[in-house]
Image (cartoon, rainbow, N blue to C red; front, top):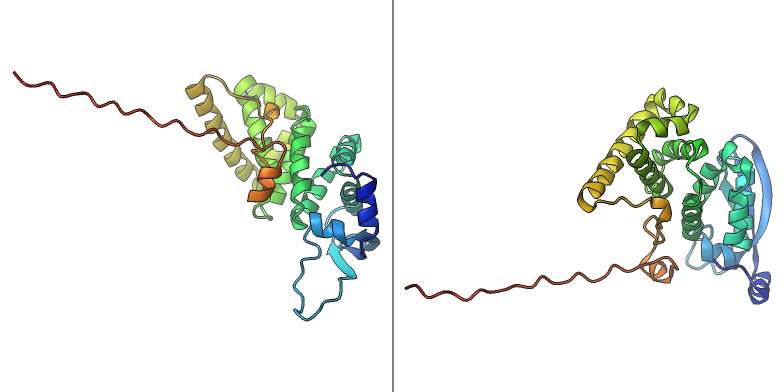
Length: 261
């Protein structure tokens, strides 16, 4: 999503607005956001609800349950209007990791099928330093993944990164970096087994890459869209998409038969 220019602003300012009402089990009825229907249709599934075929009236209001903090939705709205640059500023906020907003914003992106937001979050996490906060996000996402089928793209990247760090620097260094977050995970029976299984699978893949190719690439340095979620069309439009080079056909050499003496 590029930053909106004046023409874009005119286009969505003329679009009919939809009242989005937030509901939360913890906080009760929350704020109402009046958002341009053109943006909601382009970047989310909020207006995709089943309707009577004869109903031609535009949707005027929708409700959404917010499991996490209502501020996560305000961050989503900021992204909806401002795009990737605004998202970078949000995700660089030191408080964002501490109060678990990565999980909350990822949850919203998952439930609203906001493909572009998810992909931009993955791109941003690639730039995060490998410190205890990184492992904390992975820890938070693991519990989310177990209840949300098909929601693991961000966690997949983070597991790949952890596997690389362990393979490159060893378990002792990783445990030192992870600190108390790793200790907490080890006593959580509901998360430890599943996350350790994923890590072992990633470690095996990393080991085979290192053994067979002699060099293991740091996932943080990849510039393709391996961890993106794409349709066939959006994949071709992605600025990070790198088509695989065509495989060379093996040459078949037929040796002439030598006449028997």
